[in-house]
Length: 480
Image 1: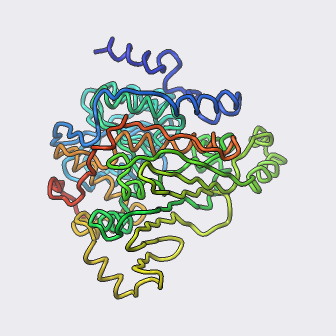
Image 2: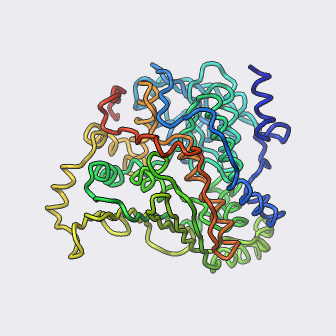
Image 3: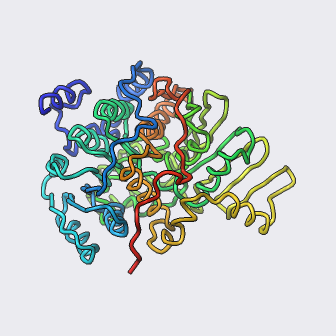
């Protein structure tokens, strides 16, 4: 088995280059040092031909009665995820990993009453490898900076673990292919932790779409417009200001999945339709460079950013699917704008939209339905997962409860041997929009093909059932 893993690491091109180190293929570094070469690689990998080894779409892995979990990365997202999981029955927190021992201590404090005594891995940049190598872990939950998501996920799957990774799952197209190849070879799930797919309105519109409420789907929109301008430069906010580095040397939609994931599910992308190509346009940067210069005048820490090529404020990316539907995505994390994920679903019979205002539905060109009519539609189409767990999710929290629903659903699928909602093909395709948009922006908004990571299997793959006719057996502990 060890030799097989070593051979496979060589096959996918990550053996011998320091997997897990802080310098492993970070998209921003390669683009900064050799931008032309990095962009050429994006185009080359986007056009790659691939023969599917095993179809992970709809794959039901063997049931796991008690899901034993190891967490890697214990910042805001990771530590909150550990605490949320303690409300679920049928799980065990076996190990915690972070390069900062104080983060492990703080996380243990958060779960001190849950009865778990997880092993600690810390103190070095590759301590996570030891966690992945344990024989008593079923699921590795990754909440590290972006450039470590794929290296850890690949290593964990090669060591027999299912993987759940924060977004994006990859920062290069090559990494997307690594995830697909490894998941297919090992038959281990690689689940993208896209919590917005489990927000209440997004689940409502998904159920509506699957019951034909919108008619033929025509167009969808999504966004991540979130003013985190000041926090990007805050040395105490994120470890080694890793997100500032991403925005300092990459220019595109770097965080596409919050808006894209829910509408891809509505459109049955990878399960009846497929994204074919995109075009992407970026504004200039009107704020980030100025901020870096101002900070560098009094703090040497920021001097390397004075000559950085910061991404522009607003990116707009448009996507066409093979069935002729369109998607519009936007991304802006530096302008002083109201938060919006712009979830819009437009069909031949109806339209639904949330953000920047409250959720609304239209049945004609004459306007939105009344509050009473909306309530009636909401009662009719609210999916089973919200009816079962919605109130509990609100109590536990996590972005209004959607994080809890995401975790519960993942654990329930693993415990009942059900196909996961968001599989490796979704993780790869949704994450690929980041580097593909970079290429398009750098090439005067020319179009670029989106790889079909399913190798044509999207034509017969079936959408995952969310009605809870199967599963739904994972118990929930009361919030103390």
